Amino acid sequence: MVKPYAVSLLLMSGPALAQSAEDITVTAMRTPQRRSDVPVSMEIVPAELLDRTPGLTFIDQLKKTSGVDVIQYPNGLAGVGLRGFRPDFESSINPRTLTLVDGRPSGSTSFTTIAPESIDRIEVVKGPSSALYGASAEGGVVNIITRRSKGPIHGQIGGGYGSFDTLRGDGSIGGSITSSTDFDASLGYVDQRDDFKTAYGLTRPNSDFSRLSGRARVGADLASNVRFDASVDFARLNNSQPGPVSFSPQTPADTRLRRVGGDARLVVTPAHHRFQLVGYASREVYRYITIVPTTASSYQSSRTISRYRGVQAQDSWAIAPIFSLTYGFDWQRVELRPQSFSATSQVAPFSPNENRDSKAGFAEGTLLLLDGRIIVTAGARYDHIVSETLPTPLKTNFTGSRTSFNVWSPRGGAVFKLTPALRLHASAGSAFAPPQGSQTTGVTTEVAGRQTRVTTGNPDLAPERNTSFDMGMGYAAGPLYADLTYFHANTRNRIVSVITSETTALRQSTYRNADQSRVRGLEAAIGLDVGSLWGANPDQLTLRSDEVNAARLRASQRGPCWIQTAIAWSARPSDASEI
Image (cartoon, rainbow, N blue to C red; front, side, top):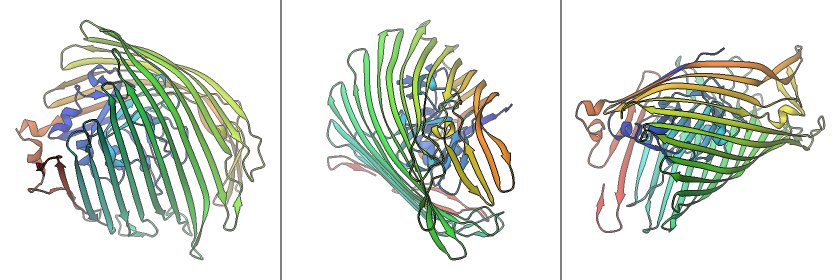
């Protein structure tokens, strides 16, 4: 049994706190809603807070601004977990916490590929969310909302230099091109060219890294009630890793990660309806390069290609002033193609090629009672999932197979507004995670030191099922926001790895469904706008001159030292401008 307790504390000035209070409109429930009407526990991280949070990657900023669990490695891999579920990474197509970009799957196996320069806000929804999003939402959902700029063209640029010969630059621009067309574009670059030094003054060789990421969007109002947007994003990560300190000799390596993705969305809003059609796709290539210390030579030892594509179709129907219904259909295909190499040729990969197809229908209704003081929601989703392993070049020790699952995921919740500032909220629901194809069939082989590790799939694996409920109280008035939530979750058929035999030279294992696990805990968050208590506006708490904002200046005896500047500007089509 695991009992996690998470507490978040936010002290800041200006609009960031106001934007995270109860009046903000959120979209993590697949339709725009006031935050105060949402029955589940959630956190909002606004752009203002992200801009003031030091970090070289998006995951660096997220772990400092929200109550999430993070696993992060120097080879560019990172993942996020919620409510006791371990973060997943390293080419996992089946995480326990789902990552979305503007409400659709991110199409990435690692959080480090997401461009932080393009983010407008982050919505962290805690608790099972399969009733709306299907598989991989047992712990919750992290929904990344990107910028959608309108009005005068405006932007910002920034740069910095820090310890370990690190250069950093970023910029974004956006606004209206015409009265009906708008755009956004962002680009970020980080390059740590020197090796990392520990707190003891020891240099870790082969520990440099670089990141180049960006995003572009264009949108148009085709009619008064028809909107079209298209976007593309990319990431390029080069990371060097020295290997574990305990290994002798050292096992240095390099990793290269390349990802490109995008989406197109059409929104039609006739009377009482909001139809939305979204298509998305992405391709990610992760390469592991082994370095031979004795000869200083290197070779690509593995490459994993992940592809995502899918379609979301939904309608939000305001049937009556007190009742609305959101319903729709999702389709997604995920493909995983691993490859392995020796120093001279291609060899059989550790795991086989695999696909996962999912089709689902969902519906959720919202009922308002007592003039909106009580909000009741209830819904469900039905998923049909097919996982299969495919014939894989050079891998001859398995036979491909096909497994299908049908899963029903209900959810319900309620909000009771005692006063305009104080509310009670509660929710209950279920979520699931199907086994990957490589867990149900085939043989996976890897070498760890002097030991060969062989894992055999189990065709009788059942999907994990998580059932959870939570209840809490929230308060938002003036400069103060606070929320306290208790949750309790049971997971059945937990997929675990079990060692069946082990010697010094060989370890054999398989996968099984554990009986059950239980997680319960408290989540507490508090935000206080200190500046408003002092009568200060946002600019009074920022170091600035007429044209330049200086931020993120900190130093420590042994740790990083950063100096960063930024320029924010806006321009209008006429001669008028402001800086």
